[in-house]
Image (tube, rainbow, N blue to C red; front, side, top):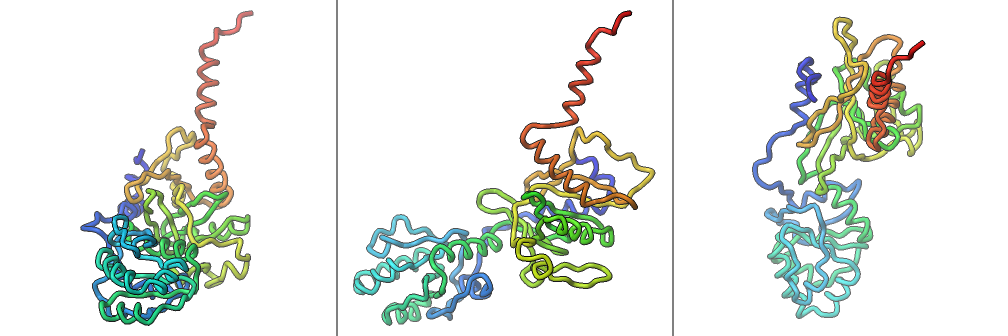
Length: 337
């Protein structure tokens, strides 16, 4: 139910942002923009650097394999093509036949080729790529790492995405998005959770995208990754202060916590029989509203909310248990003298 959202104009504003904007057409990414992600995907363009119209539309990479021998039925458009040791060896040993099928794969995909392990390329391949403006990106990473890093980049760029002001914390391995007005204590609450052994994904600006599996994944900006801003202290480096175990680059979103200043005129839910929900990129996520007041330990409350959410997920609901016990007692005949 969403009755709570209607009572708070700021929460209603956040709800609209999390819904995201409807997409117009299919998302694309210029293949050469992969060069902008040197921190996670180190690579250089060895040929075809003048290409302007090579676009990626799929978050998956493909190995051409037998496509270089003429079996093109499984080559899909919009996929980046990964050349590993086997493909490079074949190109070196069969230049005449493979050059023709290399061009056909390039025309069919209209994207780029990624070379693993900084492998040396035959001169004819570089000349061919420059002539037909086919980007060749060479990386020192092995094929498995290229799959992981490039797929992550493409998921962020090509899938529906929203960004929002808040904190994203992994609490007991569940991704918790903490929202609230500026100054309500989001960062201080997140810092308290870190002191308890939880992990920071992002402070201040949180990006959320929906991957190909339909899961919502949250992460932070590359510029401010591992950092937090605490009023009175300034910017701190969480990884340096608490170790690498206190941070994570991304996490699946499980629930949303909304912090609001305590309004003594408002009646807050004391049973929790029904939980509010909030729409995030077309997916409903549970929303817990926690009023902030002196003496309330928000980190404690969030940890308990996460534990309780987990128990409900496996079929344990304390409110329903109490109601069932109450119904049973009311159905019993009154005691007689």
